[in-house]
Length: 431
Ligand code: UD1
Image (tube, rainbow, N blue to C red; front, side, top):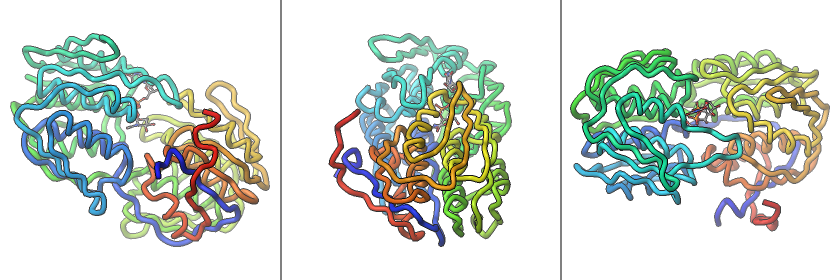
C-alpha cells in the first residue's frame, strides 16, 4: 500500500514513555549521496534513514550510471560510481524530492556540465535557487534555464572564488561547497550555513581527501584538489526527529529517552522545552525528557542554525496549542510554514497568524478531527496534537510524514500511543 493512500488513526489521551532511537538525518542523506558522485569507486553510507527520499536519490544516481545497493534493513547505501557519469537529472525524480537539486554542484565539478530539472515550489513556500546559481556562476559555471532545466556548463573547469551568500542557505552552501572541492584554487564561502548537516558533509568530503576548513562556522575555505577518493561515512543523527520526540514527551506529560541524539545540536530547542516546565537531562548517547504537568507557553523565533530550526516550528506550535498561557511564534525562514496553523485550528487550537508572526492561545483541550498533513513537519505535529486531543484524529496525506520520520507510527506505538496506519477512504479527494 502506498502511504499516499493511507492515514493515521490517532487515539487521544496518550502518555509517551520509553526509549526511541534516532537514525541518520534526512537533511544529510541526499547531500552525502550526491557527494559520492565526486569520486570514482565505491562509497558506503551508514545510519541511512529508511525514508522515501533515500529511494528516490538511489534511482537518480542509477540513472547517472552508478550502481546503488540500498539495504533498507541494515540502513546502508553502497554507491559504485563509474569513471564517466551522466550529467542529466530528470523532472520525474527531481520534482519528487526538491533537495535532489544538490546534484548540481557535484555534476558540474565532475562532468563540466549538468542539466538538472527545476524542482518548482512546494507547500512551505516558493524556495528559489538564486543563491545556488549565483554561487556556481562565481566559480565560472555558465548557467541558463532552458525548457524547465538548469543547464550548467564549465567546459574549462571551475575556478575558486569568494562567494558571499545573501542568506546562509543550507542548499546553496552545499552546492557551492561540493563544486568547489574539485575547482582550481581557493574558494571562500562567506555567510555560509552552519547547520550540523553541513558539518557532516564537510567531514565526509575531508575523508574523501577534500581540503575544507571552517565547517560549522560562517566562513568555509576550500582548497580545490584534482581528485577525491571514495569513503565510508556514518550520517549524523537527525536532530529534527530527536527534537520532535522531545516535544512529544513534553506535550503528552511523558518520559522519553531519545538515543543516538546529540543534545548539542538542539540547544535552543531543549532550552525552550525547559521553559515549558519539562526536565531535560543528558544520558549516554542522547537525552531524556520528563514532564509531569501541563506545559507553560513559550515564545519562539526560527532562525538559521544555531537558532531554533524552522523544521521544529510546527511541533513548538502544537505544544503551545495545549499550553498554559499564550505564545508568539515568529517564522523567519519559510513563509508557507503557517499553512499548518489552519489544520491545527481544526483540532480546536487558537492560532492567529499575521505575516510571519503567529499568536497561539493555549487551550485546556483539543478535540479530535480529520486533518491533512501539508508537509513533513506539519504531519508529525498534527499527529502529536492528535495524541493530546480528546477522541479520534485522522491525519491524511501521511506520505509526507513517511518522508521524514522512519517508522513514526511504530515508534509511537512502542512508546505506548494508540496510532494505526489504515487505508484512507478519502484518498484522492479534496486535493
Ligand atoms: C534545508 C532543509 C530544510 C530546512 C531548511 C532551513 C534539506 C533537504 N532541507 O532546506 O528542511 O527547513 O534547510 O534550515 O536540507 N533561499 C533563497 N534563494 C536560494 C536559496 C534559499 O531565497 O537560492 C531562501 C529560502 O527561500 C528560504 C531561506 O533562503 O527562505 C533558507 O533556505 P535554505 O537554507 O536554502 O533551505 P533548503 O536548503 O531549501
